Image (cartoon, rainbow, N blue to C red; front, side, top):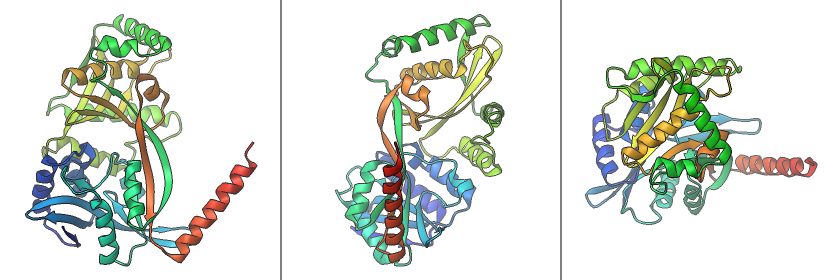
Length: 362
């Protein structure tokens, strides 16, 4: 296995190699070229290209962006996996992150790559791994890096292949949730028939702008900016919506009752999985009006009809995710740190603080 780390590469060549490897990998939407290519174009990032080649076939690809983290005790030189290290860019939230690996890649390849990375570039201090599976931390430790967990989040979803019909899925909900769904349907249908309509190519950006307006109004009313507050976020999403590269799909769905628009869902599709990424709804004062609940119920049925096996609510513990689905696993935001004196001191200080806080908690 030949493992290389390159600071210079040809973007069209990378696009072709990435999409070819995608066909031989079990990647999700966030590792598709549609996401990765859009991210590169929108951020203007200059990453290092990590490549593993066996024979004449690529076994792994990854992009690492150099960055720097400053704290009270240290300044760490970072390499960020498919992120930039810039909060305004990384707020678009890559999830299900990993190296892009061929299905037949040998066991232990990720640890081998990380060991090679340490030898090829001795200047970096920590590897930033955002939105990865807990299993990746095992490979990081096997490569001799210390793991610092910054955040751990549950991932909820609906396994559509287990509930063969919409009625079976609804019957698995709690009695209170079923009652809310019936009540919300009845309330909305007084306005007119419910429908969930997917945007065509010509309508996609129009739906996105309307979704952004509703989403932003909701979060700003609660003193928070929302996911589309920055020019970068809006530019990135316009890029990914209009991109036509790779097998990943973007779905913008409009929920309406008769002629009245109730809101929008912004989903991704890849393979047999639908990812529920963002939304924007026209909320009202009546607690029988639950457009989010109705939209997800209809989108789950739509995903099933399109042959999807999982409706993925992505990371986060928002109550609706647990009520409509079940926990499918966890996602981690962590760092793999090299053996540096200041970083060891920093880890020890944080461990001492955590023990102190635990001892004082009731």
